[in-house]
Length: 341
Picture (cartoon, rainbow, N blue to C red):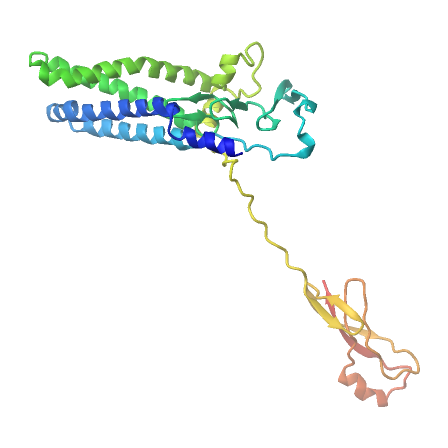
């Protein structure tokens, strides 16, 4: 565990983060040069809406970039150590499950010590298993999985639009200032070159992932050839694939997830009576019934009945006053009982 923590700490700022810093520098630097040298001329010459559109696009690109970088991709926590599973050789390498009539293999992960769910894969860079693993992107320094795939897709999609707008408006600026000195167009030329070079991989990546979303596949499945010769059981149709992947609910994080607390049921209160304890009934109903007295017993003793109801007999005043005028064999007692319903 200590070695793993040291590796994670060393990855926080190291050679693995160089692509991230390069991408951030190019994105921020090129956009800043565009807003300093090109955008003011376009606003004064044409319309101020150009600056608004470019500003909104830039803001959305930065937000999606941050979300793709900082959001947990869907990392599965490792299984706790178990003495019975110390020997991994006893575990079969694959287990087969059937999804929509198609057999899908689940592979045993020796590092995380569990069978990977379908579409899950172990990232060699992050050393973790990721749900619906797509790929590890060095430009955002994060795995792309189920929880952050939509942010990655929207990032490259908006970045493609942003690059195309910068190329178009910068080309207009250079054409209109071609007669002026090189000092005034050197910055727009640099912006145009950087944007043109970045447009090829970004546009190609956007088109590639648009096709994957429509087919309901991941980059890992496409590259490794899974479901290439047969039907993909995870394909829901073009429209449903797009809605589920890009607009569907995001599952919670598995690492650090806490089960919701259940309300504790308080034990029922008890009432002490002579002879033991009885539980207090949930609902009480007052019932009066007539009891036939036992011969040669003028006074009735307290009675406790079972079977779902409890009570003590109480004799009414009317019955006591009329006892002297009636014979012992003819009088009746009216008893009041509390019955649990």
